[in-house]
Amino acid sequence: MCVSVIGSQMELEALRSIYEGDDSFKEVTPVSFQFRIGDLDDSHAFIIDITWPESYPETGPHISLDTFFNNRISVETKQLIASKLEEQVEANLGAAMMYTLFEWAKENQQTLMEQHRPVVTAVTVCSSTDHTTNISGTKKEKKEQLTKAQKRRLINRTDHKGELPRGWNWVDVIKHLSKTGGKEED
Image (cartoon, rainbow, N blue to C red; front, side, top):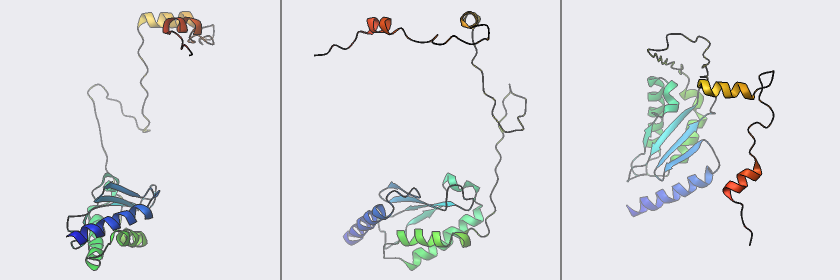
């Protein structure tokens, strides 16, 4: 048991030094890691989520592809990736294998995602007050609602073009400092 803990610590230190500054690698906890295969904008990219059990590396790590990032990947493709990674785990049992798994997945990304067809999910949200459909996909901005008194004050401040005069919201520095008090120097 002590040997596996020392081996795990050494592997953890090695992973930290190898992937330092690499945004594809994320250490969630000292025994849980995420590694992104592919670039963020790549439709064939996926994230491997790996957790070490207490008896790692004598027993294989738990591999998951259930991260939100992978929602566009079909269940069949996820199962294929997981089964191929499990084969690599079986081949490397008893040895530090995280780097090997990550690099193997990077090298075989195209093969693993060969059958990939992006899953398209649509979310429809309807409210009882909004019955219009926005086809263009752009979100309408809500205007700030002003009271009548606020509107009157705004009109009184504008010039003939409807613009506020320059500096209308500036703070009078002398008045501000007299209210807050200035810093006294020693």
